[in-house]
Image 1 (spheres, rainbow, N blue to C red):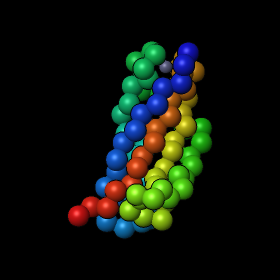
Image 2: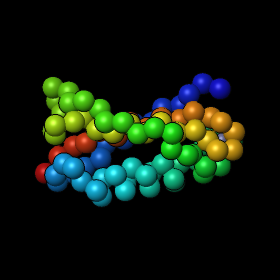
Image 3: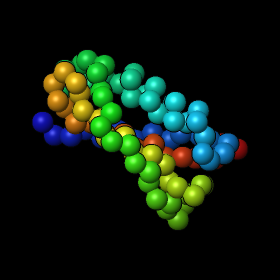
Image 4: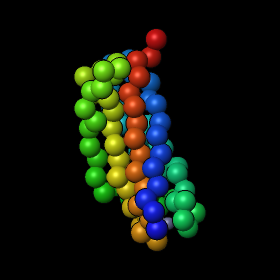
Length: 85
Ligand SMILES: [Zn+2]
């Protein structure tokens, strides 16, 4: 099985923002596994993405590496932090 990757923009008024982290995990929990269709993506690793030239904050965002607890499909999410204007 090929790993599957999703990207989202998360809008923040400040960094760090606990609500943004909650939103990331909500998206993870609401995402059905692309292989078996089960909402069972367990978190394996969470990492911060370093700032890019176009980043609005001192980091670019978060990455969640997940694995389906039912079938083992690897799924990663990249969340880019954007300033809410
Ligand atoms: Zn699965």
